[in-house]
Image (cartoon, rainbow over all chains, first blue to last red; front, side, top):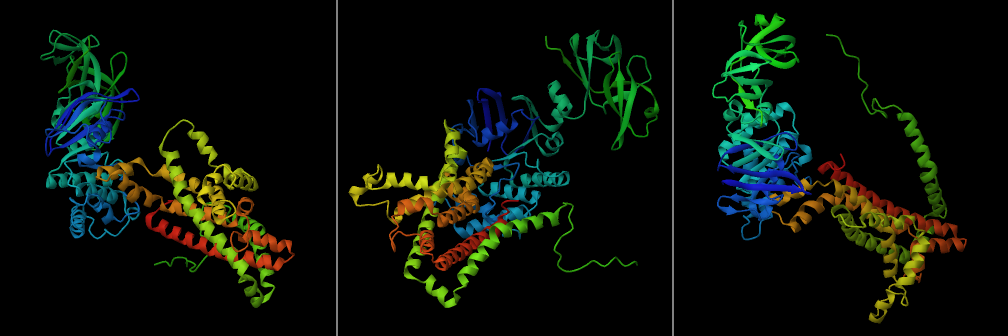
Length: 346
Length: 287
């Protein structure tokens, strides 16, 4: 089911949580809404579900305007961060709940409901636990029950609100992989909210990066990581360093020195130069950025060096192979290999 | 291979714990419990047992005693059941809606705790008597409220209400919005959400409220005697009969009725507690 969010604005007590947000969700894709707390990502998810109503704008399910449909009519599967399982029901009863509450005309026969619920429990690898109560399961198992319960109603869209937020790192990684498999197998259009960029990059077909109630960028993980559309996205996704720079004579200048990097396609003026710690080349030349080593630490297979650059000691981070001889030096010169320049807003 | 130090098997009074003061607190608790509850109750039962099994049986099965016990327990059960329904409703309103005067309303719920029960009894009688403002409405229909078991139920509802509200309220506050939202996303309408999701979740709290309201109603004396009319075999409650026996200097007779009441109440509360413990173990409420 294709879902289109059109110019949606949402206010809580006249405080805007979303400003004029538009987003097209392609049928069958797995899309992540990514952003810091307060960016409006959960609000957007709840608006799609029908748990909130937009102050203005519309939400379409396919060609049908769903904006004023109730959550029951929208037929969405929603998975909550804290599972929201019904504690007084067994796992099987939890999963079959959505089918049991259907009106008599559309409700499958009891045996059919049971068969379907057991099949879903098998899909989420919880066969044999159907008689347990939620209280008797681990966090990861509970979240899988919640997913099975949401899938039972054959939802048009599957919505997940920080589904792995309450789980520990190991279980998170497992469930991430597992969710991707389930998605590939069932093909539900899936939207999930996360503040974990690693999770979003690994799991999703597309990312929608949000900040302060606005969408900053929508794109594939590669797009968003390699071609961030705004300083916010550059800073939020992956590691980054920034330096104030000036474009003049087709070159970048930092602190009044040319740094030997051609400013291709950039208009002259001031702005900020962004680059990632692993996208730099160490050089011996004069025309380069240079800084004093302020400290270094081992990060996995690389050594991350913190440099203090320029008169006002701006901190910049570089990644070197852990056994690189330059790791011992007190002063390093480098040039960003890949960079993004964001001119100052005039 | 070195043998490990033998671990002392078997039951131990005290599990090793980092929390200090087990001996002190348990000792204090038992002393306190004995002084305030156990010793007086044992003295009561010894007194009742003093007349021997045959005498006890005769005193306990006296028709007037049986009638008063029946009146006490049936009215208390009815009152507790009514309180469960309306107490839960009041708790729901207080938790779920924000309206002007909510805090005041919330405070008023506790008034039956604080009011001298005799005052409550007199006030209720004044209103529900055939000449009172509400009693006068029912009098033409031939319904008498005061001086009948209906009056007893009303007094018991009054004094038991806060118990249900105050036990259900915190649990209702805890039932997360998410549970209701989950139910709605699965297609359940409001009625299904309430009857299938919320109320079953509240059941243990409602049961506790019921037990407390029931226990309070069974033991109630002050408010009931004003409104009950106290007609033997009709609207005479067991606590009143105990007082009557005392006034007749029949201390043993009073102790027998008290012991019977105590036993019935204890069995009922024990049963309710067992149900609670079972549901807690199964559903994990309260941990």
